[in-house]
Length: 351
Ligand code: ADP
Ligand code: MG
Image 1 (spheres, rainbow, N blue to C red):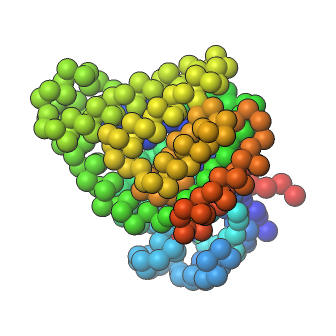
Image 2 (image 1 turned 45 degrees about the horizontal axis):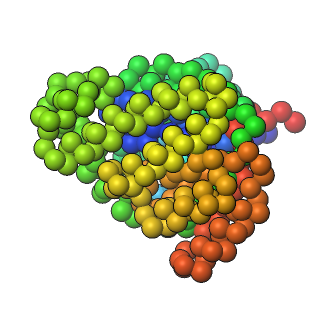
């Protein structure tokens, strides 16, 4: 029996910058998808989280338009790249919330991929695992995500965030210690997220095209004048966000936590006002976390619901409780909070 632990991730800063090949800085967190299983000639996996079982054989890999596509996609991408794993019989379970913006999808993909990599000795590097998982999600599942989530989960390292230049996939570990992170899941499912995400992505890609630039890193404020109003607003945000990621990285390296906090809060309000992806629930959390002493707070993930987080220098359990109580008075969604730490990336559990 092999057991794999695959973390979730929180994006500390660099939101909506990956599809214009800018900077991001995510971190793997200690909420996990676990996969436990044995080798097999076919696939049979039970998801305890969803109380649902999938079984399929490896000769006919078709989409089935449910959660098992994340698993089918991993086999599909491996076969397309001339790897030849056999199957798995096992179960998945864990404490990483599903659909809350903490990337349970990439966590599941990498749990499967790491299992196959270990059991069938595929010899795939962590970086290539990230790229294969991302390709599976893009090309098989059909979700146009960037590679950030998969890199954070594959390459995660305890006590470090990962700074990534998404143009060339160069990355750098940035110390992240003595910081408490409170994650708040607003309980609002991100229905709008898909259409609004695509709208922004297309608009930004068109704008880059018009300016003849591959990456948002090479765009200067003066270039914005050549764009239509909405493109100018979106790209203006992205230029500032790229700059903030660099500054946030320096702040962490210098141990300047208050500076880091200020930068992430500024990023939240820029996302809210100019990129238009926040929500009253996310804003409520950010304001209240700051009121109760957070060094900084922001939404994380695509926005329109999902999760936000705040950073503290002391244990914020009581603050999480207080915000939750206030939140329930105003909103009817079933919110939750989590105290998390940095984590190592996907790995087999020794026992
Ligand atoms: P997020 O990645 O932010 O959690 P997504 O909508 O991208 O949200 O991915 C959630 C989907 O991933 C679920 O709807 C399900 O299809 C799949 N998934 C993630 N974790 C599990 C799990 N433990 N069991 C079954 N399916 C899962
Ligand atoms: Mg996802």
